[in-house]
Image 1 (cartoon, rainbow, N blue to C red):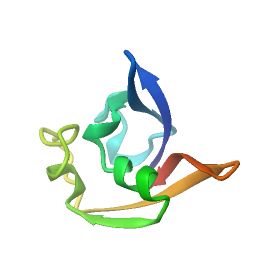
Image 2: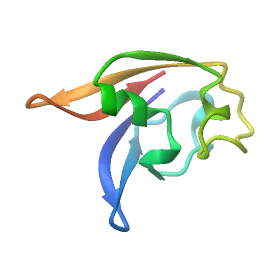
Image 3: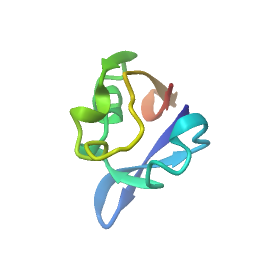
Image 4: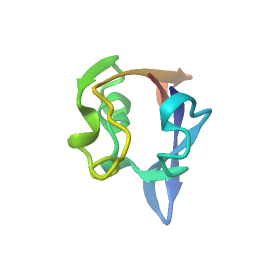
Length: 88
């Protein structure tokens, strides 16, 4: 479980993870390029998504030691724009 907030890192879109809990504590870097995470699709669409084996589809999770069979990702909105996600 955690929150990813849209930000910029080295001039490129990225997410910063906050409040990571459970089995993923310490398994994910604090920052990740937006193109490398499942949150990208939710931020782009603004819609809730349920992913099966999400980490196998994105560069950020390909080498993870912790299996993630499913991920429910919910957009976080502020003033009409998606600014991050809540995921479990």
